Image (cartoon, rainbow, N blue to C red):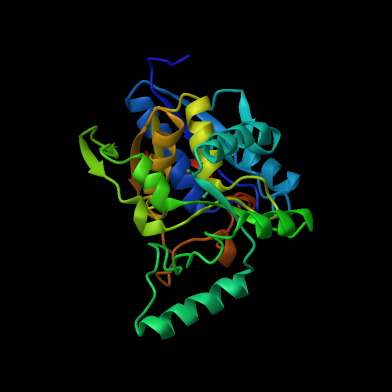
Length: 294
Ligand code: GLU
């Protein structure tokens, strides 16, 4: 049931230890939720069972408790809800908007190179800089599809972007962007720039894009506050929300923190963990002050 009071969520992935950038994101959620008289949910985005670990999840909970951020007690853990994502995928499939793709990463690279050679120009890139999927498996015949599926060939499921857009044709796909002062404006999206995105991975029966829109809707999230690195991906989310008939939250994209060398903080670069700062005796008050939340 839709709630009238605003609902925010912080949605970390337990595939590493949280750093100051995560603290910033959680604190920004806390600040904006408070400002609008809303509640804050914690969602553990652990669909990647190979990379997510219980000790990282425990670490997240310890860090957030230490920072003193008040979440609603009920935590949603995505790995317990694969059925919800499956149902959404089935609906898209029933609309004819999903197709299996058997390409390996190397095959995609090779195909892109071939397309570039044929066209004599650079193949289009998505907003994250990756080449758009060149469509190799988009038109496999029924017989070949059946043969490869029956042979158990690993595959991802992709969204047929052109068909998805055709289905959404005429709809003004846009969301309300809000700033810290509560000002809002309309943002028109352009999902085509992402091409045929993956909706279910080879090793995981869903994807970030699919599970995030399903969960934001199931949890009645009204305000999404997350880093600018996910701003462009919101175009895909808008399209999926439209296709699945889901409510569109308002969005705010906060700045990303950098380290002393100007590099963006990232788990993959082993940016200093909150747990280490804590062990060194840094206080949560000092963290709040450093990040501008006092
Ligand atoms: N789980 C994502 C991350 O840790 C955040 C997803 C989101 O806020 O939409 O980067």
